[in-house]
Image (cartoon, rainbow, N blue to C red; front, side, top):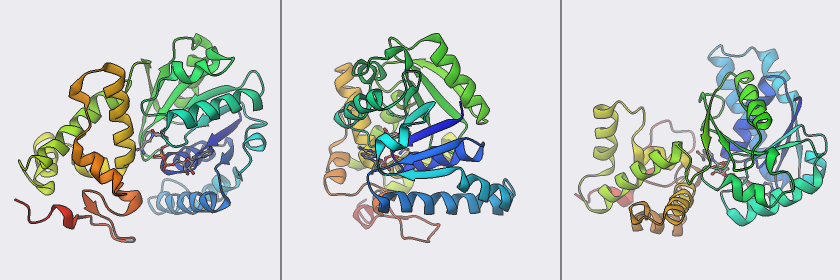
Length: 298
Ligand code: NAD
């Protein structure tokens, strides 16, 4: 595999494009507008600078990485030469079904179609295509250039060859692939999201404040980041979407999203990407402060 198309250039898509480009792959990065794509390239540039400062990459390697990325707003042009497409568009079933139907028509028959979805059924996505054997989950973690795990999700019809190709490719990116089967939330989010939801319930019921809840999990359980701040980093809208998939997929009330999370997303508070979640994030500041919505309540 040489030519990789990444569809969606948000939090995950720009990290996935960055990582493939860093390891010498030719990357076509596709999104819906030039404006969104310019922001993605700015983010990649900034993250590459951080790697240069840390001594992970040289300046020449940074330049080579950027040169390996071409941007497209036209899906057909962006995937025409792809050996692999990694879809990292918004976590929405209808959007992904539409995209995979189009990708099936626009790519060569041998192209593997992977989704970075956090929770949507790979089998359901594969069902809209004529190549279920070549559809697979390739679930990177945020931030992609740093995090080592790739959850490789086998849909009902995913072939051994496709799974082996994605496992091998993940290793070539210096990642640790872990193969799992296609059930709601797979492994990562089936375990992580109930913990985040419970942390939100703990806040909602007034058991403790934001700093206290995150402090318990950081200092007591050795988590590098508390669950509320992690939710802000993942995106509260993404967390809500995943919880809905778990709730609907298993039909078990234990996965019902906390009403506070629902309200925050309805109000447009999505965490880091909107500047406000459980914490407030001012551009340029390294320290997150507890959102004024959650101060002085206890
Ligand atoms: P995001 O909202 O940051 O970015 C989504 C991008 O998709 C946006 O730039 C949007 O313009 C683009 N998009 C929407 N429709 C499109 C279309 N038709 N064609 C091309 N691009 C389109 O979302 P994200 O957090 O990067 O999540 C992307 C995917 O990755 C989701 O499936 C999500 O579940 C998954 N994921 C997210 C995380 C995380 O921590 N945020 C971690 C792992 C996996």
